[in-house]
Length: 435
Ligand code: NAP
Image (tube, rainbow, N blue to C red; front, top):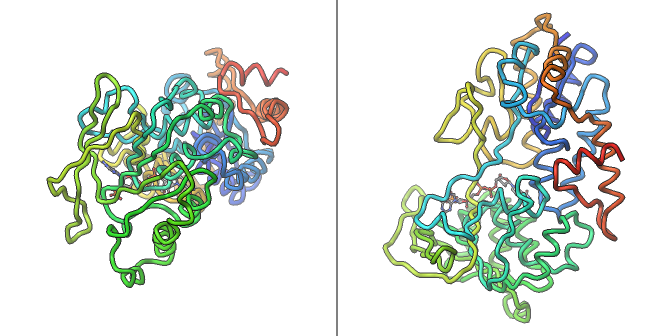
């Protein structure tokens, strides 16, 4: 029997479990350990609440968990409740699928001002992550600057721009929905340090901005290269740029929408100013060098704003004793191997890039490595050892059956038209399994 522990119950973790189930059949026992009492990681607390079709992939993970050889072990923190070393003593393979939940630091003066928020916190807030439920972002100002030109920046802009009506059918948590109902934001500025041909936004997500009830995207045609140059782009990128161009081509018909989402290209934030809280962001104009990197031109402008949300990428939190690559914010690994018996997969392995689906080949590839390395297993005791340790330490795990009860309670308390109303407090989640 092979014993595998997967740390993290997001897409990378579940695809790895699915692959191991398929590869080893009855000859494997898999524990998926998560520090939260609820599974699915990024699907639950990262994917935007108005993108329910993407979240539906959790049904596939649920199917994996219904197999006899896969167990969800929620509410157990690796690092404090149990160490990686201890897990390695019990399991043939320990796979870190911990994602990249920490923000990359926005390293400019003024980053400590109140109202400067990282996307992990902001996204966690509207998605009901227990760590960020009390964020209370300042929504009373008129203007917000969003740093970054990736899909997370788009998610954040869209959520800030939507009307209450547009959240119908979403699972945005009540505290965020209520706060957004009072929002005074009228101007959302997306600061991209490079140009329209260098965005990291995908076409479907970008296209959505052109169909919002009260908001309109605004681009400056002068920022664009000749239209003929779009032909050199790969097809997905070309579609994204076509959407961007359509925003100025359709500008006239969108004029009556009161909220603007301004794309400031070639705009590099260099300082945030304010007396205790954000009042302005200073932006330097950039141009591209021959390698398409942004370089400052020295020309600066100031943008009044009352909140800054940096959406500039994420990092994997280090775990004591596990080799870590500080520059790239992920575990030091070769194709997923960290140390004998210790692996990483998904964002913890490759950094925060790609879609949810990218984790599938990643997980399946990981299981091939494990197969090569551990063969038929090493007579370890597996979950029995973990259970004994948890009993000694009075750590009470949340099971998948418990999760289904929590989920039932979340569905039962949903507002009309919403799929669920998430619990945002760990104690509430745990109490709900007894309901
Ligand atoms: P991302 O795609 O890597 O985008 C990060 C953006 O931040 C880039 O525009 C980057 O510009 C900019 N940036 C980085 N450092 C900066 C700095 N110091 N100052 C100014 N700008 C800076 O990251 P993400 O948006 O966090 O997304 C993470 C992953 O999740 C991506 O693969 C994304 O596609 C995926 N995702 C997908 C969806 C979806 O499919 N619906 C939704 C959300 C996220 P440069 O290009 O110049 O470096």
